[in-house]
Image (cartoon, rainbow, N blue to C red):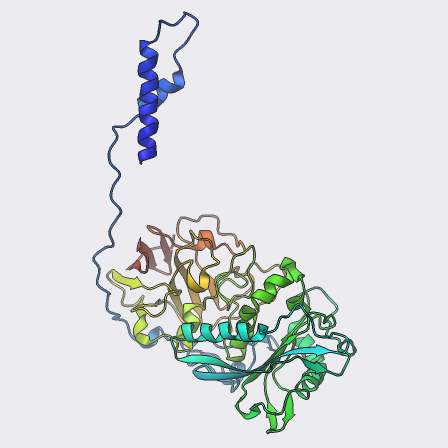
Length: 481
């Protein structure tokens, strides 16, 4: 490095000048630190040129591709349960194995049609904090997001109501209050208890909508409430409400959120939540499409399935490679499939980061045991992840269990601890020895150039990190790190 060269010559000059100076008095000593530094000096040489990308060709997926499309092995009646819905000891979740469950709400391919409005009440009037054109701006981002992450296979279309929808009721007469701190209660039980109240509110709102909407085409209704609202302590929503409309009677999923989204709750200022409203709506819209989310790394800032809103200025608008694959938003040809049963020699894959549109390979799936695969995705702090720390680039590796139990919205859940079961978990690089769960530990979880992850008899190494490609080596391993 040039800086090192200057420092060395400065040190030598000091020594030479010291040798030409008048003889030192007996009580003066030569600086031992300088002598020690001189003893360590190496002959200066020019820095090595930047490393060039290896000359690789994409390895062919020799594994049986169906082995990487994990089957959802759960009984049909269990698959019918919504995420978080309970039946005895069974906790429902949307499927993370194939084929994807279509619940008849928002489709996964083609187009999703959503009615959108700003809503106020007599005791929560329209607010100047919500500017004109706000919904247009936010829903345009949502549509752009869908076209990017689906690679043009799906888009959200919105029926926007321009003016405030003013509902002639006092919302405080219909409280939605679990009577406890955030997430400190049984969600499913609470939703069943307040189901009738939530449907009453939803119907009162929709009754004030203009008559020129196309309800027959609508797959969902999302409303943005006045920030003057205070009585809905938990999210306003309904998946079963029947609405009487000019076009007839329709069951349409409905979402409005609670005070968390319209206040400074959880230490995130309302102004930030307002700017990133699109991330919250996408997260909940994906649930209506049958996407489970909340793993790997529940609550981490690795994607919108994990949670909405930035924390400490960090946010990624990404969608996990596995759920993108599950929704058929990736082409099969963009997924490299390997199998522990046939992995007898190294396979080389050049991955395009998720934040870059398209690419020859977007994901690696490695079938291991039972209903599990290891997933490898490449990430960059650009585009939809531009709010990531600039130095955070590399691979994320996680294990998916299509038959796994899943819980979320649990107190003190760091998001990646098997104590709180999830359908997927991130896996630390081999160098990390302290693997106690740390929330949002992106910097240590990322596999950077030269690092490896060893798990389930497979070693995954990031051989070279390029500007728009990661060069990933997959090989058999005897033991986990």
